[in-house]
Length: 236
Length: 288
Image 1 (cartoon, each protein chain N blue to C red):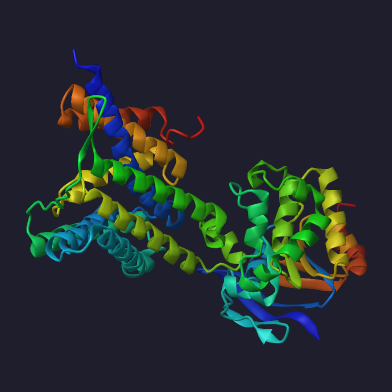
Image 2: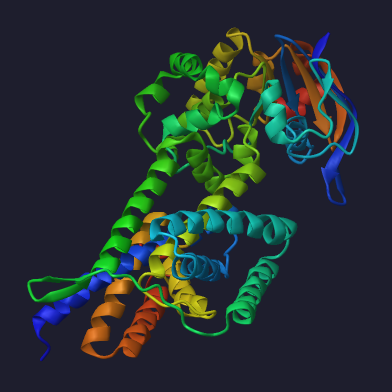
């Protein structure tokens, strides 16, 4: 049974419709990517799943229960952590306080110490910079903090929206390695990326989203071989 | 030439006044920083709390401290009420509507107070001594008010730094949507913020009534000053507001002695206007 399932999902902002009847599923333990050009609706898709954008029609089911009509702060308690586009860490709080906020909801708060040890083991740089203001970290470290903060909520599914955005090429490679390690810890991952070449090496399956519709889906390796995907996004 | 001892006395009084002003400014600033709305009627809530303490102490004979505790509770309740009844329905609307709505509350409270309690000035008479230290006269009531203000602000600081909900309040002021993704209901954070801001207004009311008389237009005397301090310190910047409170109170107090009380306020406003040109983002803002 799939962990997350979207059936015929339509959503948007005001008069504008960003997603038109999207079907998508993520199985437990999988890593799945959504790729596509700018403005395809990738970020909206993530925001619909985490409850920041309401569902207009269709179904959104997580671990057998509907998420339709649930607010963002309720959905995170179900085990979905959203690492938003642009990281969105709290720049004036210390690294330690950012991680503390990740564990805000009661269930996560109880397991705080254990979660913190796990996050520090994954990202030793965060342990070293605990007392530092989050805004003073480098871009790569900020992304680690954003992911670490999401892990503090004790999720089973992690949504990563453009994790490599704005990072230096060297840092992008390191970040993808880190995401691989996060995956090995047993988290299920749904990732949206512009860096198609790298992300297709990371995930099991991928969806191609264009102008709000799923154009193609398949095994990551197969998708990477598709001619027009290669031309358009991989740049080979 | 003015006797230096008067200047020193004015400086000391300025510090004492600054403490209570800072309490007001921090309360207003907390709400602005988190909810992004300026409560124009903030000091008018203080005025209502001052009346409560006045009636409890002078008419019903309650001990002052107990009346003060009740004033804090009333302030918190008023804060919640303002948020629920006035702010919540207009949260998403244009900023000008938010100003109009809280500004409307100001006129409502002024008229309401005039209607109920007339325009008489009322004072809580306390048998507190005036201390004489090295030729300076310092009111004991002001000293107590200053000390309690400092303790309250320290309490607020610890609350915002050390507790989960306090840290969440700071986080929401930086990124409200990201905090929702952490599992915090923004509405709940707003409630707590409004209640804490209101409680600070209640405490300020209890501390002001032992120094000043209350009347329906009390808010008009302290309201503009409080906004000026918040803007001077940088809206939403707590440390800035704290420092700005003492700058303003010293200007008012010292020029009040050197020239006249009225001129003290004029000079304070002049300094404010000049500072707005020099540092529009507040005294602690980085130069852009």
